[in-house]
Amino acid sequence: MKLLSILLTGAALAASTLNAGAEVRFGVMNEAYPPFFTKDASGKWVGWEIELMDAVCAEMKEQCSIVDMSWDGLIPGLETKKFDVIWSSMSITDERKKTIDFTDKYYNTPSKLIGAKDAAAGATADDVADKTIGIQVSTIQSEYFKTYFAEKASEKTYSTLDEAFQDLAAGRIDYVFGDAIPLAEFLKSDFGKDCCADMGDVADDPAILGVGIGGGVRKEDTALRDKLNAAIAAVRASGKYDELSKKYFDFDPYGK
Image (cartoon, rainbow, N blue to C red; front, side, top):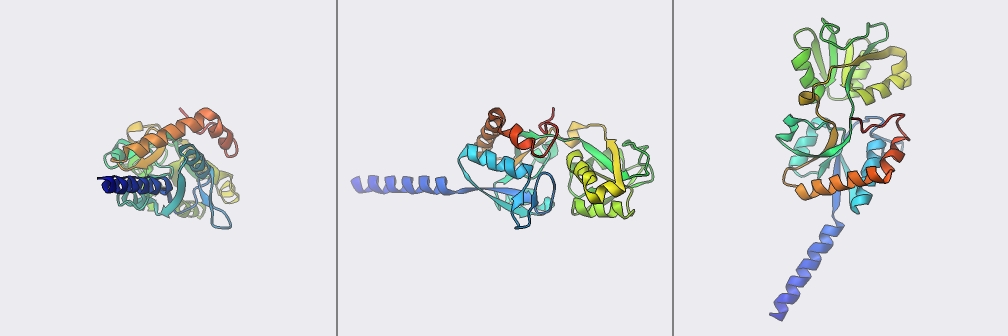
């Protein structure tokens, strides 16, 4: 009995050590999405969302790593356990919650249209009639297009937002439709400010556009979800959230 007790104690200690040393792997889209995430000259991931991840990991007292893959591979990658958390500006929607769970939101952004500088501003179905709208594949904006714009406009999908920006600047499409913050960032860039302008935010529809951005987790990983939620709340309460946000924004990205 004593030997069995020793063996069980050793196994428990080994399991504890393994859990303590295990990394929480964060899945990030493998393209630049400033100001949220991009790679610097050395190949290191940087940006607001990366700094928030670091702050959350510090609160959880966990070692964290980044796994990057294509946008449309993130949910399948989570489900097949290639990583543990989607941390990639993913909107919390009822449709996605059929497959995965989410943390509490950690920022919010409306959706908007940008177009050529000489285009008339407006973001309704009538405003985009007979036009072509560039949208990243597998996004909430693609679903919104099908509901509100499809009868009057054409959709052209892209693997990356950068590809859509390039076609807009070249005049091959009329608009790009996406999250407001990265689109505004593009308009401030040397490339974007010469070609393009803000056409306005679309009318909100939370059922399609979601209720904010959160971390995606597997439905069974309730302990990890709860730990992430506690850490996100602690980062906000400590003032760290505001501190790092002021490095990137002149507004509160948490939103309403």
